[in-house]
Image 1: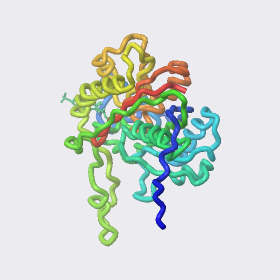
Image 2: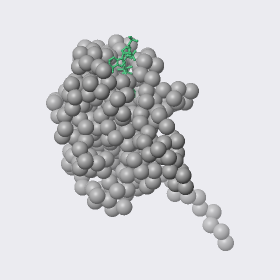
Image 3: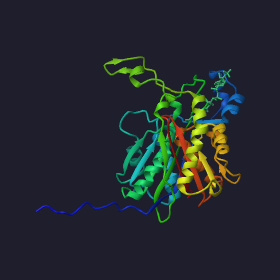
Length: 340
Ligand code: UT7
């Protein structure tokens, strides 16, 4: 006789929170002066328009996998967890330059997880915040006890040094967070979305087949690089994203007065300032300004900026931090998290 029993339900934690944060910054510091000749620019122009003074470019040994593992180890140490406690590894990146497999399983293996679920997320600069949103749902839904979320990029591989609109912006690095169970809410519901009508504003200049040819008919063998209609992205980010940030506060059930820390995607200091003004953030809210020394590291930018604020004492345990990230797609995601 067939059983009439239903399926077992979800057995997740009541809430989720970030337990530890880690960062990896490549060793080579690249000042504006090193880049200006190739793009007919000046250090003054770059600082005035973007707030960027320098950035880090990865060396040959500093692969996507290497940087991700280093950042993840730091996050695990801060969380006080060993790798076997991690059930899932979510890697946000657009610069793992192999179509398949994802880089996440290699990272999970090198870290020493016990065959954790591992996959990459492609949401460009918004990828880390997408990962945190997934991780909190996984912990609450019962599909993972602890999730490692990593944002990692080697954008120097896919940025043309002669492209005036991007060469001084994009850079390399990795950041990571461990998300685990909590008795109280530590990550607010995400506000996220996409605007595919603006798909072309930030994108690879070509499809792989356009530059490399097909396997049967090899072409010119030029790496497709990133292009950006900077001014249009700038306007969208400065205005539309301030509204999304406000929605994230509303969903978290707090006002700007109750916020301690603001960690926006590190794209441009002028965007960061415009968002803070549009949201009327009170003076006591400490704002991440890592872009000055790290440039725009896409998926790595929010965790790198948060890690710096924790290391420098600007984000303290128990603080409420608003994270918001936006970029190619166009895709965006925002949530409030309690700082570990
Ligand atoms: O991470 C994903 C999200 N990305 C972003 O949020 C990036 C958003 N965009 C930006 O950050 C800014 O648009 C940039 C920093 C990329 C550019 O700043 P902008 O104020 O938007 O400059 P613009 O493109 O409007 O150009 C202004 C002027 C132009 O000259 P004219 O027409 O005013 O004479 C450009 O030709 O600056 C000139 N210009 C440059 N000059 C020196 C453009 N690029 C350069 C350059 N160096 N590299």
